[in-house]
Length: 239
Image (cartoon, rainbow, N blue to C red):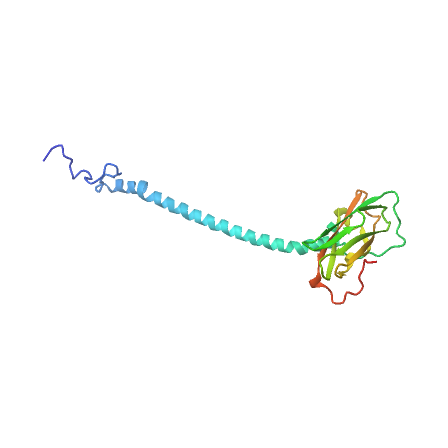
């Protein structure tokens, strides 16, 4: 045998040069155990622990997101009746403007100041109607009554029932805007091609804050034919 040949008993004769081979240390258990703990067993255990921890974190995060979605959905659902109730009681954003006020003959007019009331009108969706105020604004003293007219024309080509929904801004002045008579109090039936002048009679309560210098009364006209009352009774706000 060639003396320069490697000794098969002392090394791994089948180990490829590019492979990482460990020397055989079967005779020294302490070295084998140290090698296994340091290189072969601990890294996989660490990897498994990390993966398990990551899975738990993902599950926890998913649970939190699901709970948050349910909470947000429930809260948004409850916000509508809560907001409507509060606005109706406080008169915020004109939500109580459908209520009819009683004319007070003893109401004192505040002639020391004036408030400008602007009027706007709009049509909901694609309703084929002409709807507009006959004047864009009025100026009045708190406690002074005014009557303003709105022109409406049915161009749908058939009979229809509509309802005007009012809104008053700013919020600070909405609850002080008092309507004695208004076409918005009742549904308004229109014959084919009918033209009508509708009115609102109102005043601003003298208790309105001094900071309120201008107010806007806006109406949106809706088609309510499918909800039309069978017996219309007295139709308010028409001449």
